[in-house]
Length: 99
Image (tube, rainbow, N blue to C red; front, top):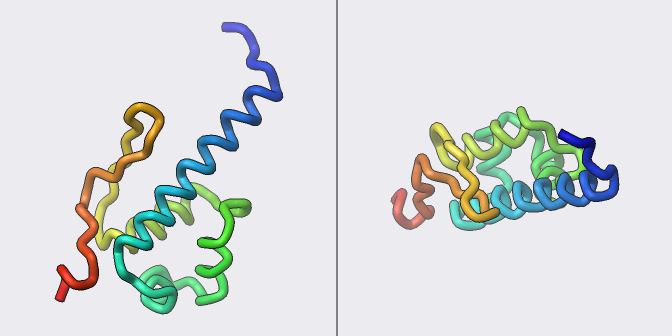
């Protein structure tokens, strides 16, 4: 296997980060949770949640896993199909469905 071009590798890495960011943000928006709700569930400060949701620059795999699990309220399985990230489990119920 030949070494990837560093410029192309950086491009692909950024696309992957952007897809994760879009997925996490979409899950949060669909969930109906507030910043305060997510802060309480994750144990993270409100300001840290705001920073986390505003940009993926300082994300770690562990933080993404914690936030997605807390948004979903259970185990999260991610798959990639045709370049798109899909959350399979659990189905994220909107706040109105949870009531």
